Image (cartoon, rainbow, N blue to C red; front, side, top):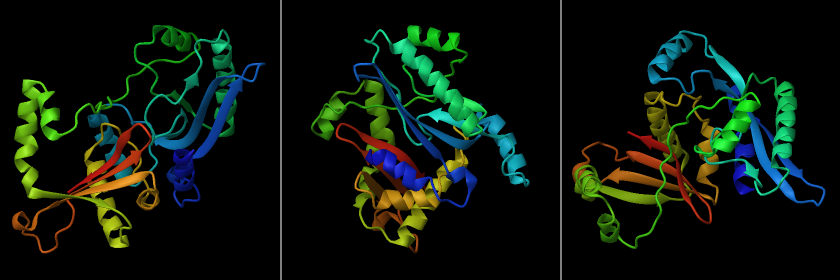
Amino acid sequence: WEGMRFLEDSFSRSELQQDNWTFDYLMIKDNDDKTILATFLTSALCKDDMLPPAAISAQVEAKRSAGDSFYLTSRVLFVGSLLTEGNHLYLDRTSLLWKDAMHILFEKISELQETHNASVITIRDLEANDDEMDAFLIDNGYFKTMMPESHHININWNDKQEYMNKLSVGSKKHLKRFALRHESKYELNIVTNPTEEEMTHWYQLYVNVKQANLALNTFALPYKVFKNMAYHKRWEIITLKIKPEFDKRKERKPVTVIFNYITQENYNAMVIGID
């Protein structure tokens, strides 16, 4: 509920059309009032080259930069949203009615597609190896495409050394070479009540990463989202600064910022900015 309220506050009443999303919530119950299916859907303006290879997006972005900001864009109806990860579809597969519930979902999606004038429907982040669901969706006119991989770590250690002991030889070498040997040069901070100046700098760090990464080509998140993150109890902001003895710049600003969403079970690093 808190996560959805955050999204609704962040992607409404905005000046740019790509920063306004519509939200729909759907629950399907049987005659005994038992929930068989539940999900939420968002409608948003998206780039048609969101998933193709980065080389294609680079060519398309050149045309957008030349003056047509909305070249090759379409309104997409998502099960889920552009700023959430994981399976957004609750479905009671033990129920004999689960396929009936899915057919009702398809009908409602068609209605919403017409209502929101969407040209693409996406049901995101289903299990990759669910042959029964794959066949069911294909029979109903959908096709399957792979999304970029997520990175999940189960926290089953108590300190750094215990964590190191669980790594493979190759991973241990990689960690030592690229992270631990530089660790002493940085200071880490969890920031609360940031200033407007700090948030402006963080946003620029995010834009740095966004502009350099076309593998998942989306519109940039609006500044409003970052302001909402900064003052929301579920979001935690981590910054890295280079320590004074290693940083010769006139102004010692963070070189990395990470925006993390916290739930009861998971710590989700959602957005990163880097100098």
